[in-house]
Image (tube, rainbow, N blue to C red; front, top):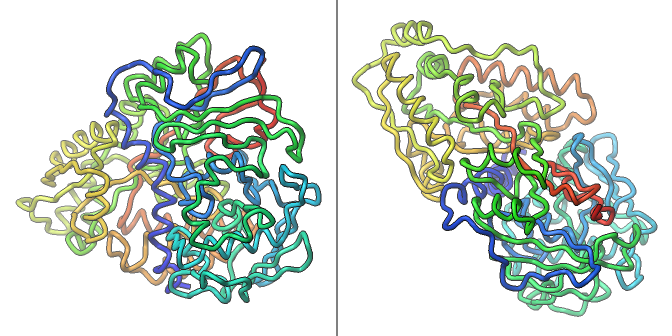
Length: 550
């Protein structure tokens, strides 16, 4: 399992970082303050109902085979090609195309039963053949989708890349039971939550009866997905320029009922344009992780008369990593944590819309243990630990941060000053996100921070990669490895998982290879004229056929 995790680490990172990284890359880089209509977006005809969704960074592709685990692409594509299941705002997996997903006793066989009523827009049923066809094409060598490397955990897929041959029509790890049932056979045990989160949320079937005659190369390059004739979701894409817009029209034959809206638009705008568009009425809906408001506009969202602000639970953290080779003494690392007034950071820079926690979990996850006392701001204790460790006060630590995170860039200056007050010299370096990740991968830092969103229901996968000996902080603790691997296979036992994660977080408090600078509550918004829709980090785009104009 550890070998598998090393292989798919990069794919996990892409998924986990997308909320903060892509969003923060747009903050503070706006030009202009108006939201001019994007080329290609549609306007409603007389009497038509239309909702426009604002996003602040481009969608990678509309081809489901290239799903990159970013929420922007996942949701944009999922409006036309629905996922097997989705995670809702209550941290519960809800079947979309699936009626149920179950696991055998040892967590090696997962049975996906598709909804009997699930149909394509041409009336044909969504079948097990569609699911298998989609998986095999997504993991094909020609498509070579790195975000699908996790399929290496299933039997018959390449154990290094998770790939299959382009012409593969079957594989040991996928078994068709009947027209509506598929079994996924894993090489190793995993919890049902891990399987659902890492596979089922990101499997968006395409219609084999329409596309089955195309070669893998043709599927990889086709523009069919920019205006598909056959879809499973409530709305069909009619045109797209993924850097600027996507337009949709309703699927009148949607299997869960004809949508109430006639059209939906996605508009890609800058952070300042997002607020301006919401204010003018040109944007109706902003989901918290696909649209990020400019820092200077956050207070103004609450004053809008035509829209409601919606803060979600704190799911994204600014995680700080300390290089254990350059700072090998845990007492020094703990002194760093004691020296930072994290409550002040939340109050001053998040305007109270966040929380201070220790370890990896926030209050957004069911495994969060609120009885775990947070390491306090205690400069005197920090000085005592440094004295005990014989800290060399002439040494300067390099602290690297993301230039796109304008909020934390301000907070980092406070952190540098507070560390200086206890005798730790720090040189702050602000880097582009790409360069920051490059340096992190090369372990070229003493301290560094990045926004990171762990799964609320299956965080063990992320934790295992972050705490692996080859992870960013070069941390090695067999006890943590054992706790994480046990958490990976525990399914449904919340008290047990809470206990395991508490033990992990307690070790983080003492050894401090990684600490949580703060967890932020992301801001979304919805025009008051739009009914039923509810922005949320998870589940914000579910049941779009019920969205309406009031």
